[in-house]
Amino acid sequence: MKIAILASEGAPYIKSGGLGDVMEALPAALSRIEGNEVALILPYYKKILDNPAFETELVAQFHVALGWRQQYTGVHKLKNRTDGVQVYFLDNLYYFGGREGAPYGHGDDGERYAYFAKACLDALVSIDFIPDVIQCNDWQTALVPVFLKSQYYPFFPNTRCMFTIHNIEYQGWADSDFFDDVLGLPWTYRERLDMDGAVNMMKGAIECADLVTTVSESYAKELMLPYYAHGLSSVLAGNAGKLTGITNGIDVNTFNPETDAALPAHYNAETFTEGKAACKAALQKEVGLPVRADAPLMVMVTRLAGHKGLDLLCHIARRLLWEEDCQLLILGTGESHYENFFRSLQQEFPQKVAAKITFDLKLASRIYAGGDIYLMPSKSEPCGLSQMNAMRYGTVPVVHATGGLRDTVPPVDEDGQGGLGFTFQSYNADDFLGALKRCLNLYNNKKDSFRTLQKIDMQQDFSWDKPAARYMALFQKMLKG
Ligand code: GLC
Image (cartoon, rainbow, N blue to C red; front, top):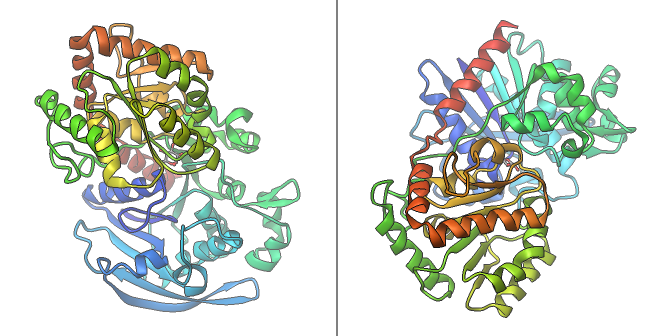
């Protein structure tokens, strides 16, 4: 099967969050399946352009019509990808290559990604890669199914399109003028993109795609509820027949405690007791915490954003640190009030708290390895990947039972049995504290049971093999439909 995957980020080229991880592992997993030919298209951001590791050749050039604009596009093919995935970067200096900083957050993001969506379709035509299936991701590529249905149908008469929601919070809103000025779509499409008089690109994708997926089974159900769907619940309910949840995997080669080059010691499910002890001591030293094997080290690698459940942690942090002999280590950047909270918590409890307000993938690996307990109290979580990374490295998760966290961390009892981690059902700080205390109790007082749980966590199959097979089954279904 010929598959084109379109996205606004993909590791190792460019990554700002979980989408970047998925766009590294999913194309690779699909291309391992016999008979598949996979192309991945990403914007040619400055960060990629400037990186000498990513050598490319120019394979096509054309102009994209965007309303009254004609925008240049260069299609650059990556030379040194070894696993068979064909990677293309779309070059336009004005929208991507000439801008410093993060991929998103520019005033004209709507126009930038409208351009990208259309340029992807033009690129497929010009490199003569007419796929059976296009899989596109989040609002940045939400216009692909819209353009495909409205204007590109003659070039892709048999191509089917899947739209995948990784994060419904960002939907690609624009003024109603945007419809004529930038999109230049036929008026018959106005209603499909309309939300309260404005343009909502994600709505357009849900209406126009052949199938819609999201990144866990539970989140697919939650999206029917206004609480989770950020205004799109009725649109999704109206398209419920199209919606499926496929829980992500993680890249088990990148995240492998036996080979991860960032770690000071290596281990597997048989040797983790010594291996993790060495990683923990080195980590405590690195982040300036007292090197203590006996103190449970609670860790978190996260964007410091509201929906990650940080308000719960802020609420209970002082009480937890007064009552328990434990250590807390946070790595991440984000909203300044959280950054400041954790910085001042570190000042208040220098023996117990380390706050690393930065983005550091290697330190993240060392934290997954050196931690004992991984905290993820997210208010909502489409899938979440770091709880799986943590388990793969033998760090026991404590999570809010929502979305992908519910699907990947079945609950254990007081003795650490019957599941993979500690969970709490309703989103409140007392319940979070309760789950944490149950976990700390297991760590402190039932050491063998805690070790058994670590081992079971490490033995789980979080690879992309099963999710990739599920994507294939849905691709087949679209092609038959
Ligand atoms: C988004 C979601 C996260 C998910 C990731 C990859 O970042 O917030 O839950 O794991 O996408 O699908």
